[in-house]
Length: 358
Ligand code: 57M
Image 1 (cartoon, protein in one colour):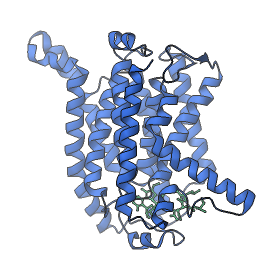
Image 2 (image 1 turned 90 degrees about the horizontal axis):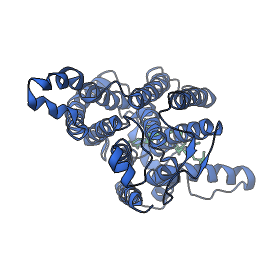
Image 3 (image 1 turned 180 degrees about the vertical axis):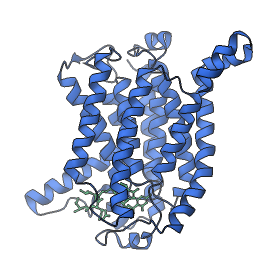
């Protein structure tokens, strides 16, 4: 809004020229998202408590989780609400990358909201069927990929870390690849969201790392200097990433152990989809496996556990996803959480460092 309303006035009021800069608008988005989410979070938690809309906890999980029953959930409502408010304040809505990323985020937000609504408010613990969720996610991801390629925002080439230029052109298969990244990221974040603050920590580090990638990819000179593919107006996603960090910090204010609220599928599915979409838009799908390494490890632990149990009737981990395995090994919940945060910080820093290793 400020960009569209105030920047044009910069002819007369020179100071308003500052709204031209992505760095300034990203700082405004970060600050706005942080303040809005801290303020909104307090009221949302009280509302969910008054309505007694609390988490239903399955009894087949770790013993320590049973006391979490009734904790308010669906915190993703105010996380994404704060993000969208911050983007409304700072974003340039003439950017196709921004509009497409908002579209994917909104679609997954609605999916997660409906799933949580059925589980938490309607006490129908199953929510939307797994097949129904996957169909919704893939249709959204395919649509986003086709729009981006159709409008020549991105090409269908595959880029990998440490290699200058495209590795190969995926052609029509790029849409399946891009959809797999977006849907996989959404579900991996969803699986990770099983301990207080465990998902939002790596979401913040991933948004910081990807946010830097969007700034570089959207800048003609810097992208050329670093041999990074230039993507027109993808720099507007730096504002989106800054808003995610701000709203994430605001959410963590309440979700830190012992959590006063969980983000719900409305938060994990949408934020995971957003990160995957940003990775596709900056041609960093493979690097995102490193950036989101905690999410990838959690998802792989489930795949391995289910495959092992189905083929050998034996478990590899005490319980999957892997955060439960460490809990059952006797690690206190806060220790599992902070150690996963430390790993995600290192992965994000390493991913940024690869920009110079091409
Ligand atoms: C998403 N949801 C948490 C909360 C959060 C195939 C199988 C691996 C699926 C998986 C599953 O059900 N995943 C669903 C994880 C749940 O959190 C809610 O869900 C939202 C995220 N989608 O926002 O609303 C529980 O997680 C805990 N929690 C916190 N703090 C937080 O900040 O403590 C969440 C956020 C909450 C709360 O207890 O109730 C979840 O764990 O369900 N299934 C599992 O993850 C189960 N694993 C399992 O069955 N493993 C099997 C096989 C299938 C691999 C095995 O190892 O043999 C575990 N989860 C549960 N019970 N609930 C263990 C059993």
